[in-house]
Image 1 (cartoon, protein in one colour):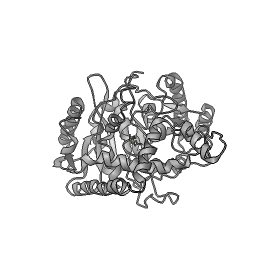
Image 2 (tube, protein in one colour; image 1 turned 90 degrees about the horizontal axis):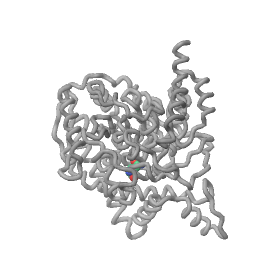
Image 3 (cartoon, protein in one colour; image 1 turned 45 degrees about the vertical axis):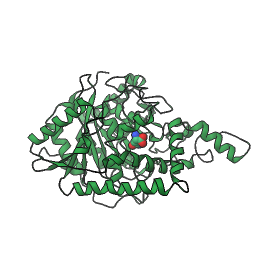
Image 4 (spheres, protein in one colour; image 1 turned 90 degrees about the vertical axis):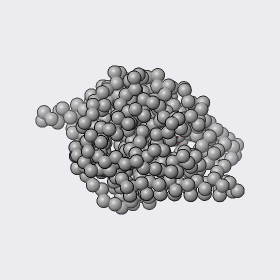
Length: 459
Ligand code: GLN
């Protein structure tokens, strides 16, 4: 009885913490407290988890932090939500995000920005910034996010927690509101590696409702949490340590992490990923192209916002003009342009060819090593407002996370240091397709032999 009581208090203590600090952070944008309390009574040992607002939860608002989906309540659960409910997790509302997951700072949300708990003048990263902040600030022990170009790993790094993007196809995308369907993947954010493994266990697996989900064996990821990394070969790609554009303190922390792993017995190898420099441009053709197509469905006819007008075309125009924010409009324009007749070959098709080269770089490298080690981000968290009018500067935040999405491989970000100002730094580990186990193993060993994950923001 004692343990039951203690655990049911977990959801309750989360509610208390949310009540105390969420107004300051704006991490959670919707929560039905009575429903949480009922669910905690029904499932006394349920683990609380908050959900990024682009994942459909039946009868709860799911808005992608966009005005165009205001008041939208899906009539069904995403597959990951059904799995969490069946496994006894307690859903703790919806987490803030960049509108439609376009962004790296969580500032483009129609609900206003989320703040970084380590320094509330700064961004928590994005687009899963609400999920990352909720975990980092102790509002919840874990959260679901989605990662199209870094949106789990980048906010995890900037908020000082663990975030994993699984292999494309590992987790069902059914009920994830699509951004770029060939890149999107749902994954866990958590305060430590074990919790991330527990959450991935709960959500992964083949799903006939998602034609891109893969029918591969799902191991118990908690079994790979061994504090032994001897003989694991870790590749360090020279392209991820450029002379310019990589913050000195970030670089220092990553190089130290490399040494820590070497002391634990891994074998380090220099590798090259020669097409890395094309990844960002390639992504910013493919992702907006797919986004422009996916966002065509938001026109006032079926979901969310509808602005009345005298005919259908005007209604679509007015609804989309009022409903989408600036970054969403920018992506729709870029994407529509690169898919249009006459430009398709020059942009989209060429980007798809470059994507294959980037993927082949990784497959080649994985003949020599088991894991690839890089910084997660080129710099620590920037200030709110600093890059909002500088889209290219913003896009550069994902320079080290985007290649894994283009290649479809898994990646994890774990805390590996702090700057002098006390801002978290993330270490990224990339793995072979469907080899999340080795990533968890290396991440766990690193975590067990360091103290970074134990430091908590003073909020
Ligand atoms: N920041 C990147 C973008 O704006 C990645 C976003 C994501 O992974 N959802 O597209």
